[in-house]
Length: 260
Length: 343
Image 1 (spheres, chains in turn yellow, green):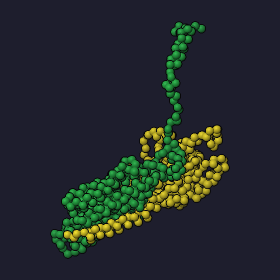
Image 2 (cartoon, one colour):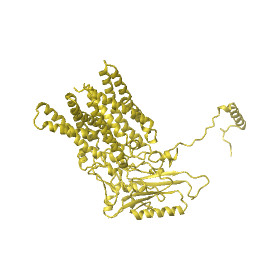
Image 3 (cartoon, chains in turn brown, blue):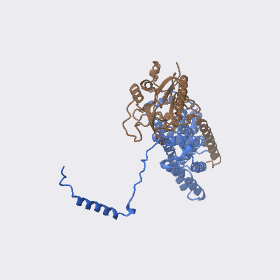
Image 4 (cartoon, helix red, strand yellow):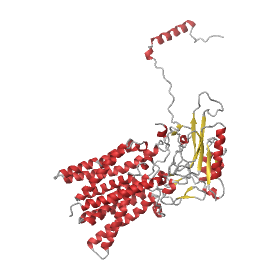
């Protein structure tokens, strides 16, 4: 039993979408229709109930006067997004049925026979990953290929990736690999590479980190994701005060009123 | 090589060229509109725009049953409180009885509304598989079970006590009544925590205000419904004035708090709904009730008008908050902290 993670490296991604296809085939995820988004080669849009791996395409313009193989030339940034499997997962904390659980591999797994489709996980995920399928009723998300991991196999997406842009392995060695890769890229002249691994935020780290060129925000990766349980304290204190005021006010109003 | 017979002679060609020239000379410079080439405005993916401006978060997928439940549950919870306090402090049995029934009816409708919203309604009992204190949805489900059974019990036992005062019935009635009032206090406020403790910016930025706003809204609804049923206790009027004062202050606070995450409360459909809801819940019933106090003859009409306004305002308040959540989820600027980068 080990704690595992994904490292998705956009500098190696060629945008082939094999991960999307492999994920859909292995997990038998239904099709998500065909719609032109009109902004890039990405016509999927975002992760959702029928998309558990999603290749994002970020076009970055060339700087004038640079060309050829210069790191400043026109770039295609491609990045395969996935559920982050947070250490403090908003969806898991919020789930009222216990359908969402933590697996022995550290992933967040949704038990399909328990979920009743209350859709509370949908609004508590800081990354917009979980979604309720309107036809099937319940929520769906990346399983971290729990079934494959149980058999000692890599998740389908990592297995299918032809450039090893998606790496899979034990979390700490993989973090080390990510840092080494970042250093190598910087040495090679790619000064704008970032490692997206929000360990400092309230989600307390993730089981899917990413290497991007440029700001991770361009890939809709939020700089400071918050697990919504951080708001509970304030909310319950307010509820307590509101209830006390309501009780006192009602007592006062009736005690002071005309008794009939 | 022979020239094509159709080709004009050299003279004709020259004449035609002169003709074109004269044509061109007629044009005044003012008539020439050189078109400036503008780049096509396409959505961009960058630190300033996010991923082509697409949402980072998922929109709430709750159906309209959920804001209606917030409204019904809030009113029922407050009604249970009025019934319990009324029994403690007054002899107004008709009011106590109606308040009890209001709580009981709300206690029956609420679970039905929540079950209808589930994607798989047949699995509604899965809500009671576990109790998770860190999940407001779980806390709320258990609270609702306790509230529904105790408020229905209190109403039924109350009727039994009136008709056949058997031994033990008064005690059981009081026990059910107190349980229903205490769980009612949670029911009227927890829904604010429920939406406040989420990833949706407009909700979590108001996590401290939401439970109080929902409590005031629920109390105003319960009081107003009892007034519309014909009760004229001055305590009800006092409570309604208190709630309307709070609603007025809340409306002002929403207008004053102009942070990027709260835009949905002031702009668009949700903003208009929130303003309308604020007016119907705050200043309008407050003014009507003050007029009622001043006018001895038409007090009842003024109070009834205020009650209608409060009920509509409360329903709209709940809908506006949920709708604002949708608008807020669609805006990637807050989760990506774009305002910080580009002031």
